[in-house]
Image 1 (tube, rainbow, N blue to C red):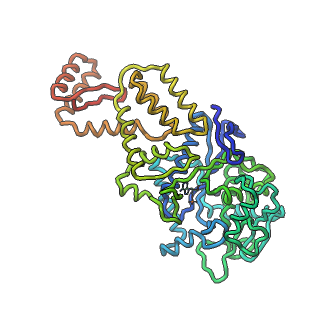
Image 2 (cartoon, rainbow, N blue to C red):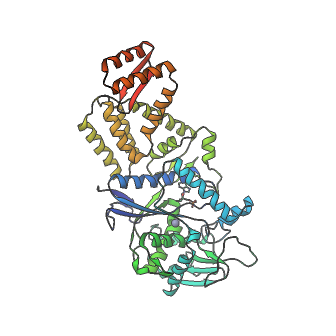
Image 3 (cartoon, helix red, strand yellow):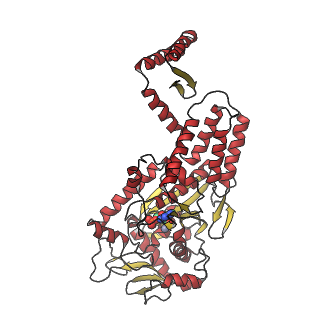
Length: 482
Ligand code: AMP
Ligand code: ZN
């Protein structure tokens, strides 16, 4: 395990990662709200989270990641007012809300797979955690942190002295944000809904009976605290909640927009219920923007998988490469031109690792691996890590065999499938060879297997006379037009 430093939103500092139970690193990742298409903004955030997981594995930690799927309770305004995003999508698309959730969850994981993002160890839907969420709200009720008003059970933020510590915003500023959408019955503007009641006269597709109301549904934040406690600390068993079992989570990830409300409230309710620190390291991804504005469904400035495919990007590795070129804590402006540039860059890299022969220079290999690791341990500095990759490829004195070994090693983190791509290209090129050349190559291969080197060499010369070059690499034989 290497000394890995990560920037912690809670302390505003880069800190040495010290997991509670090393080498295990327990991670909670806020997943998508599955009411619409997965867009490039989501793709960026989850690619960066995937880099974190891969870096941890690279340095021999054992990450264990839990991700939620928000399929109920996320209201339009993030502050417990307005329509539920799922119900609205169902109404607009004239479909069942459960069907909407299923469809968009499927799309999300399809996109994740295409981006080579490893699936979390546990993925769980909010709607599969209703009894546990109720138990948690009851615990908060017992501990005196809640109150009931017309539209639900609310968390009283004035009972938490350090409320808002994650955002580092003065309470005044937090209050200003909260006042935008005010519910006059709330005791404090920052108070938030733990459990909501279906309004009279409204028909909801997703609702449950709870101890407080026959027709009700969870607030948005409660699902993440519940799942973190359920799957990372095993706090629920036999229909009961055991807050004393809770152990502080190592890392919590999400987009930067989640800091002032969603994550702030996750902290408040979890720490109120357990009396323990919720999370040690908070990591937040900056936005992907278009023309200087956050890419989002609400602004309508988003691109999805079908936009990418429509423009010929069936393979999403250039997009992944493009994401890696901006540090996760920096805003990134997306343009189709930059994606085209990333595609060319990827093709060039693949070309470089396509031919592999010669000797190895182990000293240099060691040097480059150390350089690469130095960039990773500094808060996952992927743009600099990519620069090391280019240094390797551009090093004319480095044998190509060594280049291949290094690239294969780096790709455990980059996740760009570089060698697989190189192999594919080689194969497709071989498929296009004239049948005469293919049969000569096969004959040569058989002779080589039998150790008949002189005869094999004669065939090689014959192939060359026909205008093709034979290269024997560690991956097999490569034949190219001269
Ligand atoms: P949502 O589906 O809106 O709940 O978002 C799922 C995750 O994607 C959250 O962590 C968001 O912060 C993140 N996200 C949404 N839009 C963007 C964006 N434009 N850039 C980066 N991350 C985003
Ligand atoms: Zn969350």
